[in-house]
Length: 90
Image (cartoon, rainbow, N blue to C red; front, top):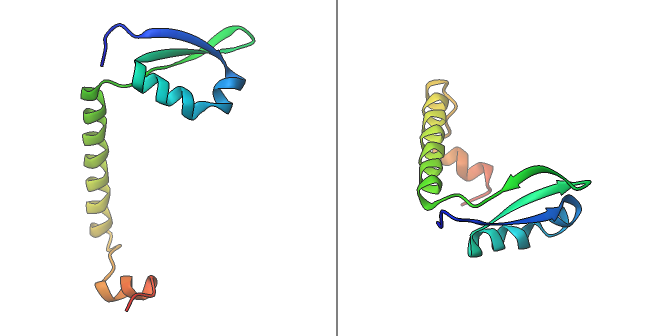
């Protein structure tokens, strides 16, 4: 990720209507957006670096694993047959 992000401003209404477009632009072009409401900046949107993406993905995975282990300790588990019945699988 480029350290020197280009910064653009956009109104909140247009940002909301075109959020997918602005998200793609931010990622593809390394653009940071300042979102305005009544010409006042209210928040900034910028892409995460590859390192930050990886860090957050690993944190999410660790949290998911911890929750799965807690569910097992609480007895919140299903057998293979129960799963097949729940999803009408043969």
